[in-house]
Length: 238
Image (cartoon, rainbow, N blue to C red; front, side, top):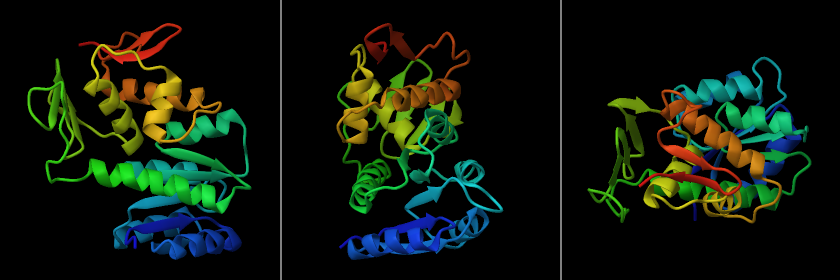
């Protein structure tokens, strides 16, 4: 059974309890917080492997809480919101969330997304040297000009400077870097990184690409690393 700890931050007790029941049935340890401030306190006091975070909350909303979490941690964050407009989704992803689920939702779908996020997060944070890159100079290190990606330690440097990426951003960067010169469509990126069928998810991928460029590039409008192939997709030059 799973032993990872999931933190649920939502001001609706019924939602917290519902998600908690499904996660407990899967063997996860569950923590529950009623708002962002309480959630941040739980993060300081416990080892948390994933956060389910509501957007609309009193005291400290989900957007602000997400930004606070990302200042110090790279744990996966799945945002919840009763709003379904694209701008709300983009706002959540831009502040560092890895996925977005609109209320009302199917609990089993949310559990599936949580499992997917945890698999990738735990794999990327392994230190047993089990990952092998087939396009690189060392087994666990991909080097492209001044960009250095350490697969085992989940560390990224540009020009010697540490770059903090979310698990989803790292997964996209790893995918492109492992396949230099190969063009990936937004659909292909989504299906390989999110591990689920592509459905009206182009904006999701585009937001993550934009976030990556903001962090990696001196001039995001003239990227050195992640190139756009217009009408086709994205690639990293060989």
